[in-house]
Image 1 (tube, rainbow, N blue to C red):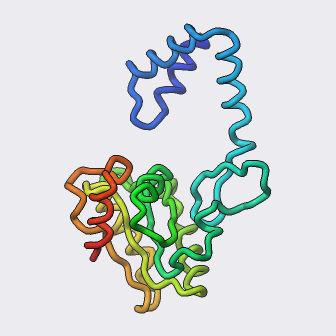
Image 2: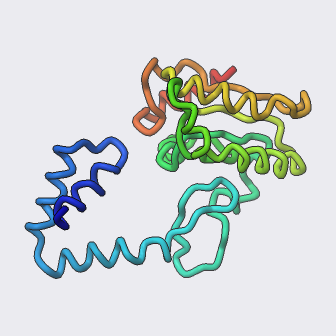
Length: 203
């Protein structure tokens, strides 16, 4: 296998990228000037050193020279400590924060649990979520909001999380985003008003 073939294979592993798009990305890199290609390679090589995973919500954030182990959201004690919104991926947090309608905490589960592939459960941060809930209940957590896509995989993931939390005290309420989100939609692509309505109408 040539280096070009290997590069295409790497791009095919990116979320939502098929073979045709992967080839376009690879051939685009071949058109770059040497300085541009070197800069891109340097960014990829050094990214993991500058961007780390938050020990609280498990999203990735740029340290910007600091030694903090938590992102700015988890570090902000002015946020509502009684609410924890569980989402599939980092970009869901970005979408919700843009809307400005939620002031609680987050947890990134790291994916969804497909109906027909239970092996994917091992890739999810189920144990991490349980530890996070236990930790935050000591500081007033009373509601876990499930913010998954309105599709079969998202609903199956919500059931999985409910099972994880079923033995917690009754004072911990588990709710779902309201149907302000249309069937099949994902948080990442929802507009701020839709997200606001989904949060206000959670049940």
